[in-house]
Length: 377
Image (cartoon, rainbow, N blue to C red; front, side, top):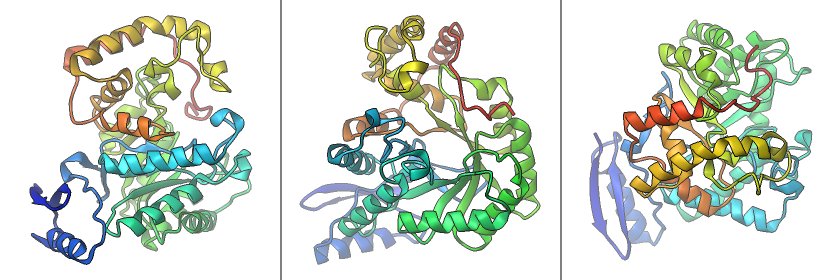
């Protein structure tokens, strides 16, 4: 267990002495202060978990950055300097509050998806600027390979990964995932993931939107090379529990594969921000309709009541409910500093078993909205 050591400088930080040797981080910290360098706020080892059977450790909650640079689904179809500054604020505030795991993808914000600027490019820029200020900053990056029909063979995975690394301005990433199963060529894609590990381009590999059968097949294929399948990233929230119903969650638990939950607050529907009179704008308004939001109100009211007992917001309760399922890392999307700070407050405390069960029961009365098209295949 890491030991917390307190230092008093012109500012106060809590730093951890890790496995690299007692005092090694402390010595670097002292040298940095003596030389006038800035020191990044440290993330406690107790706030991290291993990702599946890999050696990679990430924070118990991550940040999704799909909306950064996007103007086709998010941001009311426009991207500007104000939203860029807000995204930068979300990045820095996440790190300042102990969340250092960020999930992006090559298609987010890309020209292929009619975006304004690549999310990977923005994340890479933010990382570079952060490390210029805090040279010792530790940031975990996950990105994804798009299984486009014209991409064939294991080489396509390595080529795409190297393009992602160029945009991210990194020599390697922590987690590389297949964004969705391809129409064909999936065995080649999995071989490409294994190649990426062996070439030192990634620390861990995962999949996304994989059914139970596809998940098991991917696990076994990588296992033959001695490479663990670290994660399966799927749509999972209190009001969208398809991973439980399809056997994906149980398979993840059985195989030791971490379930990374995207849309964990149902794209804002579980925050309490939206009501039948004030539905979300853009494409989300066609999913979370006035009729759906009307049926959602009893659950939202109970979430709010429970949150008040802990001085927590509905958003934090909904995220904590997911963490309570075990072997789940939620990655809510943060557009600004306020959201990032709120997300960080979702961990470090726990709902009771009775509260978890009660919310599940209430949510079961609501017909879920649509999910990702391929997850049942």
